[in-house]
Image (cartoon, rainbow, N blue to C red; front, top):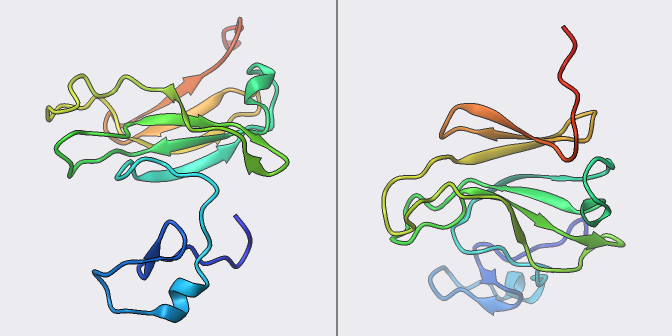
Length: 150
């Protein structure tokens, strides 16, 4: 993402492809930037955080964790997870990889077990994930952890 870039909404999508469902704005379409990476339709990414700690394996260092809130209005549900996107030199180097998932027992059903909202990186390098479906905060850590003192 380049500061000041325009990514098209609502006049264009995926670069300079005019959206014919809205009023024509050739000026906006012409200056639309193509995104470096696409997430799935309707996954509703609400927050992301770059991992600058070292508790997780080096594969995760400097990459982005993205909270996908989910697709409440689709026949087949998508999202409802946290994905990881590897980065190098400020650019994504691969597709989103499911990292914290399993909250949709039946993608065509109505039940979901969680809706991810926010991401934070704790001082110890663990990942904190807010879930407004279960109304809790998940803590994901890697390796042997000592229980809190007290």
